[in-house]
Length: 455
Image (cartoon, rainbow, N blue to C red; front, top):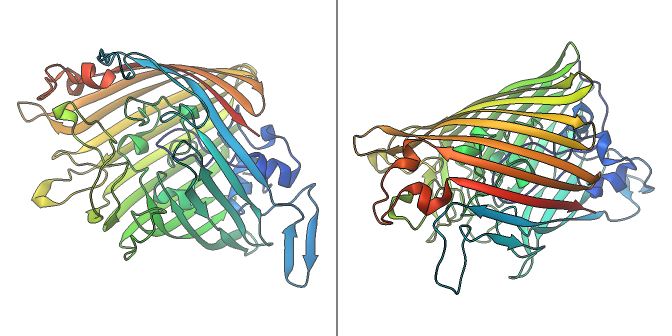
């Protein structure tokens, strides 16, 4: 069984835009522990120790002194951390020949604070221990347009002996309702592009995560009701799809449900779970909606404009993972399946699928530590259905293979090289407005080189 110990936090795979990089030095400073104490192979992947810290609401203290008094226990220092990334991305998208601007077909560099998706991120994190039963984490994104709140949450979890039970008020731009509390490395919550490749519109290509392929990493604001123990996690969250946007407040009409069992099978740290999204709530236009790129100008997860509207949140997913070692080398196996019904039937819009047919994906991912704690190689496959029909009315296939390698220069500095190739009838179909195929307009093959730094 999972040992009840505490430390950092994070998650694998996938998805969309704002990172909750719980590998943060915010918590390293708080606990006095190295990143490797809580992460499997590299950040942001969690081991059992890191899961326990996160499930405890970021409350464990270590070397850092506290200011204490009657009903008071706060860190002596306000802990902060910076996450930044830089890199290069190139796809087989039709190159921009204007001579003025460029796209990913030309190849694009990103530097800290300037770029898209996994290129040029810069975020300031503030958080840590609030009390014996409460913690806090917030992200402020930095860039050319200034600073903005990207996400924040305040887990308040009470120790009931063998379990912790409580609530998590939260808001996020781009991680979805699962941001309230999630500990699996399957892409059940969108964390960071460290574990995936970013596509032409800034979206994760999601070869490694079915949940992120169907687009669950949207804006969200709500309240999670959480119970966890060494046997797993239960999370029931009421939310709306407005994120941190001021003024767009409505009822918490959508519901997110999560059940995750964690256990040890031989020497393997194992988890199996299910997720469900239901209801309808206020939706703030932004990244996250799966838009049919048939006109050649937009793509999946393209930015939307307009006023806030009511949209359905309908999807479900199954996932599992095993982390252990083979031949003395650490290895992780991850699998996920997700499904979202067509969102344009009877005039209803489903945030997770704007196509008329079912959007679904089955993903398998593996990563091997060829030099333990230093270098890894990984591969993933996706077998998906886009939810959009071809000329014959058939649901088009949207498949992918993903290859990656990582190298840790330091525990808080990670380099990653990746390649993804997407294929299937979705990519072969003629593009209505673009005069070519989707593979030419969006880029069905992508190469990416990144460096991620946390301090």
